[in-house]
Amino acid sequence: MPGAQQNNPATNAAANAAARAALFQSGFMSSIELPSQTWADGGSFSFDLPHAGVGLYAVLRLTGNLTWTDTATNPIAPVLSTFAPFNLFQSIVFKDYLGNTRINAGGFSLHRRETLQYYADTSGEASNTLAHRPYSNTSIDNFKVGSTSGTAQAVDFAVLIPFSFHENTTIGTLPFTVPSGNNTIYLTLNTLLNASATVTSSSPLQQGGSHTATTTANLTNAALQMTYYYIDPLPGQALPLMDFSQVYEIVDVKTTDNLSASATKQVLLPTGRTYQGLYAQIINAGALYDTGVSSVKFLINESTPTMQENYKSYLHRIRRTYGRDLLTGELVWDLRARPISPSNYGSIALQVLFDSTFAASGETAFNLCKESLYVLQTQVY
Image 1 (cartoon, rainbow, N blue to C red):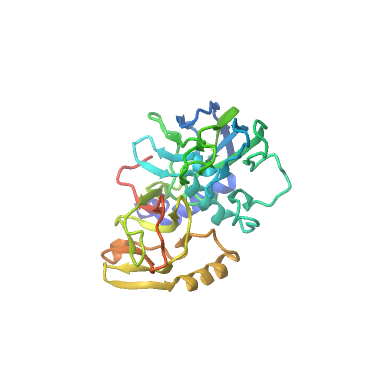
Image 2: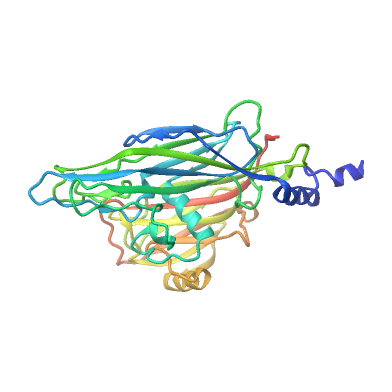
């Protein structure tokens, strides 16, 4: 019947939008604390999410006390990585009950996505990525190294794991009330301390030279905590079924090729996705780096350049867009207002061009976090 189709949120966009609005208006915003797990250096963990409501996001939190110890005559404290402390989370993988991987990204990528979407004031961010929230409560957003060997420092920081396109929409998520199977988050940790003489991007604490053989770091009373946030619909309430036919996906791709003087770094965006955002980091000598970046651009069908910018022009545009500068070596394209789909063009590639002053040293890498939506072939409701 035509009237039934017009009121069906699974097939009618207006009915779907009305169901979404009603859900946020009358559904009960809820959360569930999952059992905490004991931190283990370099360990792997999993959290089965509750069979409850329509999932919006989860918050992964680490608490404990950080102590470093150096038995040398002149102890030297580790220094914080430019990615600290979020690079402690090597990979965060969210798989739905059908086995679809919806998130496969590092903690730093998820942190940057959250920062750029939800926080306008990033005072002090250039030197400390935890300083993006200049609020007065000092009991959270803590990760620092004390100046004295053996002195414990409180640790408390968190990463948001999104299930939907935005916490105020259900686009890309699913009902977690599935009768069988689990929606699960898998977590793999990096080691807390890189005690080698070479700085890397993978550990929050870097020794990078002196006293590497005598320095250790440890977290005591440390726990990994997970809170699941969702909307609990009213009994019998219509759900925005078209929203659930899409998957909100966040995926990291880390590559090491073509990172040298006068080279062109290219990453092809796979078809079948509609890209909402790209978050990239250039890594050299184990840290964020941008010396020698000459220009950035997109390439349509591997031949036609578009959105081509001198790197300094890009930096000016970013300052106007966000009202601040980003971290050195960080590149961001917010595509939500005008998403791009490679299927419409044949292919789309992102290119970063380096000039002769780029001097590769130690660990070099290009990490691209891709935020996209795609249509799910198997229904989740």
